[in-house]
Image (cartoon, rainbow over all chains, first blue to last red):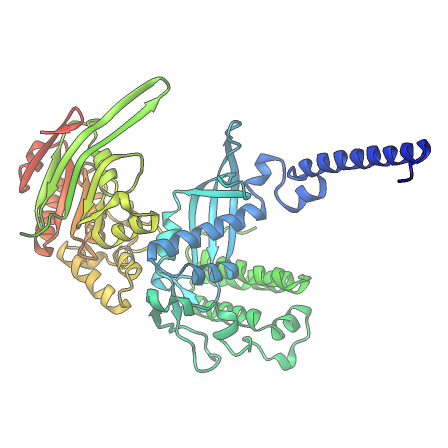
Length: 295
Length: 224
């Protein structure tokens, strides 16, 4: 067997050392990948604990936990509730960080939560919105899979949410709104069929004539069955409210209408338009229930 | 012989504060038969609420056995305990815990819908219960528009809405004046008996306790 000369041996040795160094630094980098930094952090949770109480990631966790617990209370199909959760909208007013447990990393927060259900479903009393002051804790999951949210004092949302039922589908888009919304209680065995409104409740026609649509918002609503059904619901609610409003409420309903339309028509995407409709429906309700404050 | 609705054996619960451990329940053995109304008597801080929390499957951290309608609670997961609460228990608290955004009627309809009752039937049942408690004219009132006695009557109707085999009541009239407390308790007992439910009623009031079928006393963490 031929012997390797010393130069070749030195080169091989150097290559091995170089490979070891590369492996060492690569391993160290992997260890740091569990720590969210820079862009990764901005895409997940903000580092400021107070801001985490008010982050969209936290609100999404809250929404999912509300539906999870409602399904559990109902003894219903979790998947059906999960599906609905994706279409529901959670809003939080005055989110406040109460304190932080440095040892466990848990952040205790509170706020006034509103949950707006998607079209096509409702809870006891025909409601599509639920509101309550709640307390919530953001903490690392026990299995280190991310973060979880624990809810306290949320029964005012969870209990009615557990009565979720489909709204019977109208035969056609209602000319005078959906004043009569006979409900069909969803049995546990049927709940897997629960679908939010956009795909099934309406054939995609909004409350106005799409042939005359000319604003950006109107065109977007006409081209999206989900937004169309929101528009039908909002318009029906508006008509009902006008029908029973006193002069002061009527003036408030009309003065806020133009502002809503202007806001909707400035929206750059579908989410913004959907949120605008949900907010408008809550505004109408607040006006009629005496909770509305002029801006 | 009919199986008891509730059996506890050796039920223990302690709380630790710093270096101090307080044993609140030190081995509670209790049986309640079907349709039996039992007063749980004891002074404030004696552990009555802790016992009701345990029996109501509202908190963990207990040692011992709790059997509800023959089902051992310790063998159930979270979903199973929720099912037992939904199907077998009704709750009345000292403070009514009604949902403020909902009317009296809706508060009583709600637990029935959670159990998949048909909407019209749930409403009829709620009207019947609230009517029996003298609230026919208050169906559409929100809790904030009701008096304390009326609020507690709605809470009683809500607890009985699904005709639970066992009603757990924690100082149900403790927040009311004596006259109203007597009236609400009398109506509560009449309704519970009429429904054939059993009840465990925590109270520190000997006079109210004497109106029930049996009295058990909680003393130093054990029943006497």
